[in-house]
Length: 61
Image (cartoon, rainbow, N blue to C red; front, side):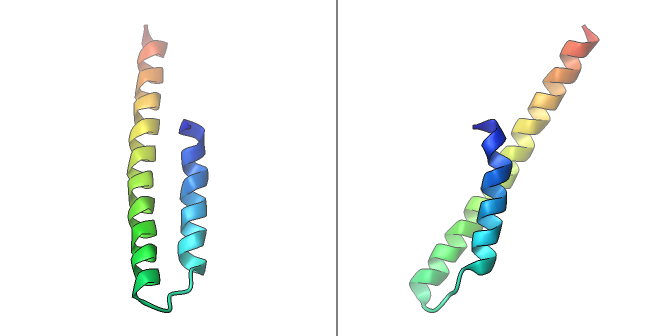
């Protein structure tokens, strides 16, 4: 699942850009996709940051 996060970020970004908004329901759907993109970016940054920090700590020992 960890390696799927960057792909999910790319797919969400493309989906947001290509999504046509015609009414309020579609606008709300697009806003939810933007929120999911932000959450995925934060989660990906935290998880990869932790993985790199732990890997560096193991290399020192």
